[in-house]
Length: 399
Image (tube, rainbow, N blue to C red; front, side):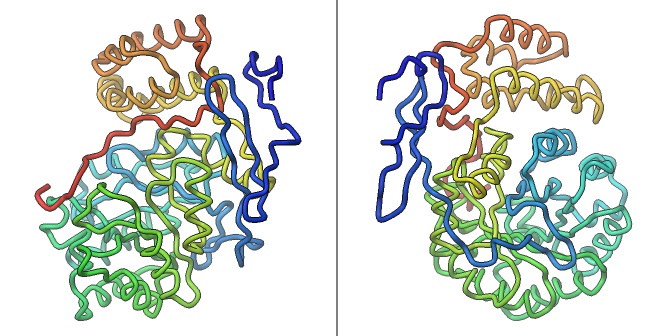
């Protein structure tokens, strides 16, 4: 399989690259920097020949940007949307009571624009009155979809009765609360949740079935329990149980999808109607476009050229400045330094500068230098290495 084009970092499709495995061809891409990357064929799934709908809202794609606290703000959403392929973006989770109080920080998290559509606003809280009133407020504000958070595991959310704590009550109170929100608004209401509180209380199938009964338009299920936090592996069997628990509404799978192979495995093993992607999109903003291309043609295409990645860095940063100003933009950008630098193979020295970023010109100078240098010898636009997206690790009981 040697070819002089390998030295130039081109993608080569050889006739011998179509290997039969259990009757399915696997496309192999060869890069100059890594071993062969096998691309599995897209699964054939019922209903995927039609657009995905959340109630009366039709989505352009079945691959959605999942909410990530501190990341999925307006600047990132707009930057990802420009690349293409994303069906629905969701805001950072916002406290319904803080919405009603007009909290300045909450209003910043709710910032949007006409280009930021369709948009789900994710609300949380333990009070039915607050959630219903908050849902009405964001509907008037222009939300396309209202998403109720029942998955957040952190203590400050759970101790108020929100997030994963809502999955503990199967007496009917949680279902009634969600029904209140559904009846309070005209836009579709969805729920994002985990499998349950812990391995002994896997309540997600029950809730999905009951939520469908009271009018919830879709459910997104993260395949871990609250107790797991981000430890261990996502349970695809657990997600499958939720898919099988409902009759009509779409169930969106979530968790640990960072590559085409991850996506293929989730779709094939769960039968979910789509995938919500969080950390995988931070590492690779081209992921949504790749997934759509892969489902349509079997070939995902590249993760963006070196120059395109540098352009994305600058676009994202400039939007952060427009959103909150120069100093807050620098602070926000520091926590993104690791995944930008790893994706570009920029090295520890540059990463250390970016984690202490204090003025825009520093970033502009670094990008100019990287652009002049060009990609390092080991870099390739099809590099399969995941960027290091830091999340708290291990069980989460004491967060």
